[in-house]
Length: 81
Image 1: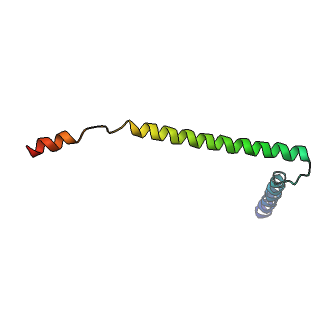
Image 2: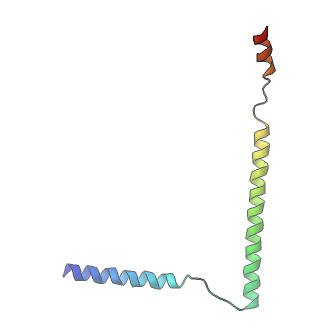
Image 3: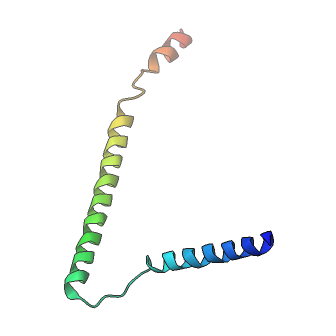
């Protein structure tokens, strides 16, 4: 009896998860207003991503330029004398 109830429970959970996933799939739309809204969201996301990448590159170049400005010529002169 335990095996039967376990099998029924597993099959019900599989059916429930399949039903839940079918609601979140990709939908086709022919509504021009909805299409324009989705396209504008996509463009906004792309611009945000490019802005973030540019900011990260700017920070990495300014961060690297301030390091290791030691003069190595003094140690070479001292060892040559």
